[in-house]
Structures are given as structure tokens and as C-alpha cells.
Image (cartoon, rainbow, N blue to C red; front, side, top):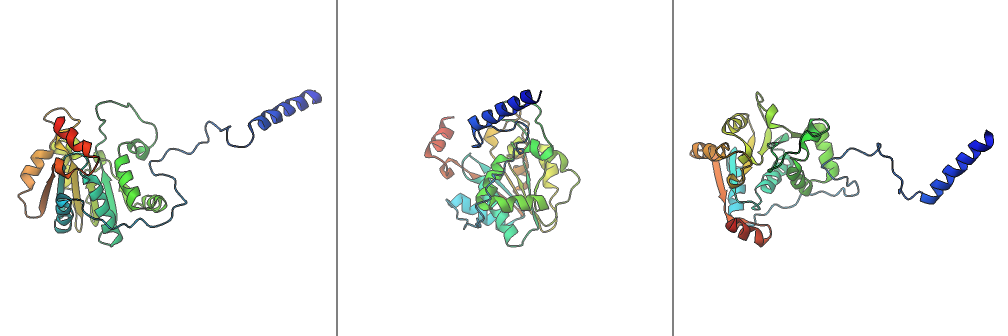
Length: 252
């Protein structure tokens, strides 16, 4: 019996020697859970870049955010709406003008249903909020971003759980607002509290809701006449992605 056990141990050792210790053999269930924030502990440098407008319309958005507590930035895809909103949020947080950043985005799939996603609330929302994480990671180091999220300074706020809240001393970004109904937008906009700013971004031409359900255009038409509300509209000339994007917008 002892010899048989010794042979098993020798066989296991030979198999381990065959694979070596170069991480070719990995455990199935000890992998760290997926996170939308890249694990980049080697880059501790600050990401406080100077924010510069790429065109006149972007400059209008930046000026509007500095002047009014509620700004709508709507228009064609690829014009930098989300990036400007996130960059101004980080700028306000670093300057001490607000105490926290609140990000919200409708959990609506673009034409296909992914079914139920595993994990807690944050993990379920992570795929939908990936564009916001991308913009944050371009302005803040990943190490600092994780710390701010752990402290609650940067908060992921699902639209479904926003009712009843009063958001004071906060910078709120509502992204992809074309996928919100009129009732949802009314509820979101009335969360604005003291010493807070809200930027609503979206492209009414790319709504994933059924025709007539998006309330973005109706809300803008009713609110842009108010003194403390600004609405800035982007066009194909303001596209800052690949030049082909502007041509595709016209063709499609």
C-alpha cells in the first residue's frame, strides 16, 4: 500500500514538472471577479490633464456647465458628450466644488437581450456603465478610482433606485438619456439638490426604446426656456472620432 501511494505521488510530481510553474495550470474557481476598472497598480501617476475643447460646440458645453446647474448635451454620436461630462465632474471634484460624483445610465440593451446577469447590483450594472468607466479611467488613475468608489465619493446610482433622493453637493451625470422615458427623466431631474450640477447627455436619433417612448426631446423643449437650464446640440460637424463616423451619420 505504501508503494502504491509513493507511485501516485511520483506521478503527480512528474505531471507538475511537465507543466512547470509558468502559470499554464490555473485553478477554475479562484480567479478574481471581473471588474470594469482595469487593474493597473503600476501606474500611480496623476491623470489631471488640461481639458481642452476640440471645437466650438464643445466649448459651449464647457461654458454652459460652468454657468448653469442643469445642462443638456445632445446630438450625434462621437462628439465627446460623455467624455466632457465626466471630465468636468472630475475637475469639479478635484477643485472641491462638489463632494461626490454620481453616475447613472439606463440599463437598456442595444437591440439584444442578455438575460439575467450574475453578481450583485454593481456587477450587474458594470457592463452598461463601461463607457463611463472608460472616461473616468482616462482622467483618474485606476488605483485612485477604486479608492474613491470604495469611499462612496464616486457612486453608481441605478435609475430604478433614484426616486426619493435629494442629491446635495454632487455632480450628477445622466448618460444615454434617450433611453429614458418622460417619467424617468422627470424623476431624475427633480433629484437635483443644493450646490449640485447635473449634465444630461444623449442622442435622440439612437434610442433603443420603442418609437415614441423616449422623453428626451420633450423634456428639453419644455426646460430649455428656463434661465438656469442650458441645452447644447451637437451636429455631424462636431464629431471627434474617425472622420468616417461623420459620413456614416449622414448615410444612415
